[in-house]
Image (cartoon, rainbow, N blue to C red; front, side, top):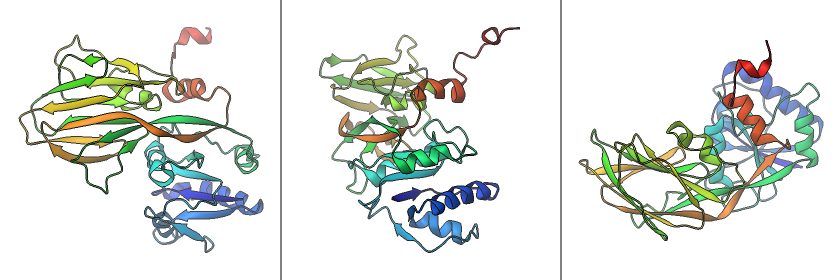
Length: 295
């Protein structure tokens, strides 16, 4: 089996964990293909003794012969995996080397059972919705898709007025610092931090959530993902910031951005039957209350 490895960097203290993973894969005859900058970082800056191996880049993407893409990092690293698989059905998972790790669900049990299940294909695949942004202002090199969310945010000190048109009609104008359009996967990320709802990843919806709204009666709204949104923002600054996950560009104020569900999904590897609910309990301490644990 061939597995693609993606990462940005890891800390010195994480080297033993890394070598546990690599040693197990070697013992099982797994061939690894590395993201070339990460491979150079490990061998150079971190001085890891890693055998010579094939590499890939942002330009080439994950080779078609790879059975899956394994991220070594946190959720920010995981989000970048979309750039390397794009619309191909290469399943994606991750091992937590970051802080929160809501998306990176593979653990390192003493018997390496999770790694073994990846090798043998003993897992289910969830199709996670992706959001797509279109505008003639976007440069050709800018990847117009996001797994978590698209956001339009102010660049200057003043608030913005943000208009949103749906196929079903126009929403009232938002007076706010920005606006988020999130997928179900992104409901536990930026959208959640501004008061958006938690949504099951399998739900066919999009979340529209204002950032620091001045009109307090404007709350997040959940819409069918069959809707297409036209969003335009006006403010005092010349530009506003458009972000897709952890990538951003500046666009002229007053520009219209079209947002819709992408025509493809990210194939997310799930190793647990109740992975989403378990992650809510474990990562977000969802419903944590001392009364739930007796006296």
